[in-house]
Length: 117
Ligand SMILES: [Zn+2]
Image 1: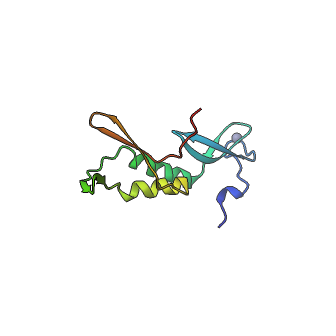
Image 2 (image 1 turned 135 degrees about the vertical axis):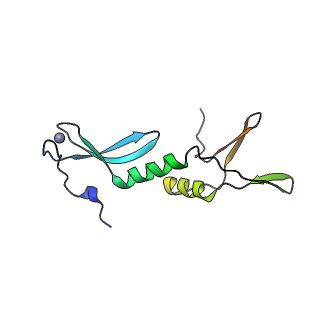
Image 3 (image 1 turned 90 degrees about the vertical axis):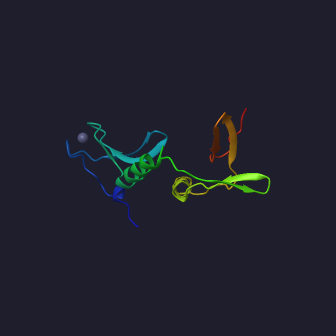
C-alpha cells in the first residue's frame, strides 16, 4: 500500500517542497510534513484519526465487575482499550504490572519494564 506521504507535497502557502518530520503531542507520535521555509505543517491524516480515537477513549469510564477467581479477584479490561494499545505498541507483553497506588485506587502498567538504574 502506498502512503500519501510518499508523494512530493508542496506547501500551499509558499509552494516549497515539504519535508518529512515526526511530531509528538501527549506522548503520541505523528508522521508529518513540514515546510522548511514557512514552517507550515501537515499531520498524517491516519495518525490524526488515531489520535482522535485515543482522546475519545482516554478518561472514558467503564463499569466493570470484580469476579473471584481462585484466591484472586479478576476484572475485565474492555477490549477497545487493549486493542488500541496493541495497535500502538504492535506487540504487547501479557505480563502487566499492577500497583496498589492509593486507598481505593489500583493502577495497571502495560508499558515495557524499564531498567531502573
Ligand atoms: Zn511554506
